[in-house]
Image (cartoon, rainbow, N blue to C red; front, side, top):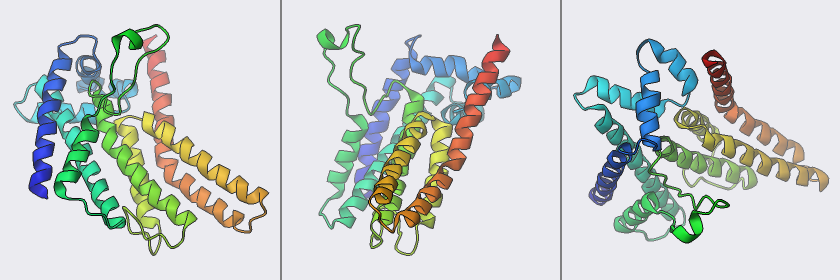
Length: 272
């Protein structure tokens, strides 16, 4: 199983490296902007100002560390860090397939799990120039935007957040739920801690996922709570406490997002 997964991940790394290097040749690409504009801001005495400009710093600091502590040049460091996060995302998908198959007692071999994890790491939309280049439509957006390093960075954390949140919400609705990704038979404390940490890390990678994920979960739980209140369900009060628990899980991420907005706004005022 390990060898098969390694083969698929190696293929993904090979493809990601050359895509990343190719993107750096384009002056207006996202890769070039992050490498040649944002990374210099995070270096040296400009570090604080750089953090205010780019508070989602995980990918950038990883590139800086690789360049500073190894003889690998900046461009190759950027490509290799992108490869690492692409591989991280691949293994999260592989782990997800393994857990889902075990939960439903499905026969799913290493080749199948490796192939589908690789496919979901590479799938791209079908581009039609006669339809996608009009002024009214910007074209399909891929779940694998390999032109954007911070999207690649946040992807594995966002997948893990979905897994942990699934087990927590399923346990709330079904007390008999044992846990698909995390053992929640006794309590959801472990899943809650993992979700809180992973959600915070996702904000440090790129906050856009948390900015969509937190309101989405909140709306789902609010709808369920209101339905119980209106229906006179005597479990409404208990469910409200579950809603508060989920809110507490998101507090570190929400605090960091608010700090990001505050620092970015201050940076823009200083620049003026």
